[in-house]
Image (cartoon, rainbow, N blue to C red; front, top):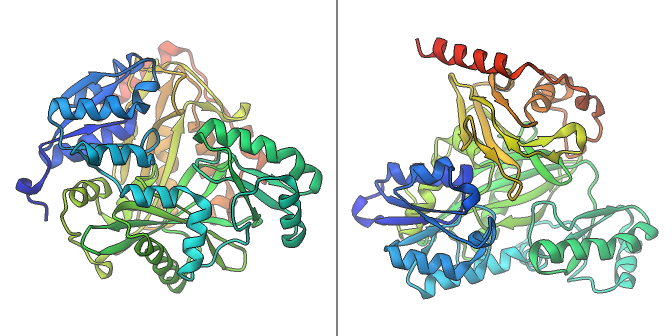
Length: 478
């Protein structure tokens, strides 16, 4: 178990919103003081109030969160021992991790070497192949001209997928099914990659039709111990960005889980990985799995793994960074029941998931057995246009798949969030769709179920919504 004597005194949380709240909560349980950073757009954020200290960074709503020198200098000035980057922003920036090290600040994440290696998808593929983990057929390096791309496509056969060498989150990805589409999309993908990651290099892989997207959660300490916490099925996504995450997968056999888990830990061991990370695979229709990438950071969807293992991933991140050994062995990791996470985004699914801004005029989160909310939203919260559209993560757990789905459906029905359009009614529709209920879904699910977008939007006069919210809150307080 963790010893307070060996822990940090103060951690600077270099993030915002719900993930900043998640880290602050873990620190509070460990009796570690926290310092938040915020832009003027976040001045009224809950996480700013919950941290022990808070500091304005700038300029603008985004640049302050990306200014490595400003953040490290602030940590030094206020006496922080460590920085937790959360996800996004600087979480996968090797130069930031190196700057922390050079300044005597602990970076709560993997080493700069691991970030650099795993952040480059081409190098990561080469590493996986070296340790005997199957990879999707692809180019041996970055593709610099269309002739190279066409030659690979002719050999592998269409469809193929153009991928950004750096970064993730579905940016810089293009699936193409002909020479003409390949020519047209090469430059587009490169421009998008350059804009998103500062690196316009791309490579090409054979596109696996209708796979499951399966990822394994890794924990590794600095004493050579590496374990996995089972898998998550992240197949339900739009434009390669995840919407619903499930743990464990409904289609993995115990044998396949063991094989994929060993592959995931082998990749982590080969890069001398420490801290939390996620190894991602595609699982084809014949049950063959292929390594696609490793994310050297905390994932948005870590909550579903925590719910079925009762292992606090963020708490472990902190203790690992403090130099402590893992206090759990692989044989002690048990997967109990099922869990689902729905991303509650300020988006309009009926309008191509267009991000929505505005002020939250009514808010009441669901509760009850097996229900978890990770969020930073409240009545009067102004949804800014500058950041990711994620408002909250609703995670539920049940003993069986059927119980878990019905609990999620009930929780979504109970969720009151008015003032901006959200994904809540869309998620409700999915929880009642027969194929989802039967576990028949893969990465093509949203494309092959267009009726999901015909969901009913429950519109009411705002004063009635507010009255109902107050009534429900009063009733549950009895």
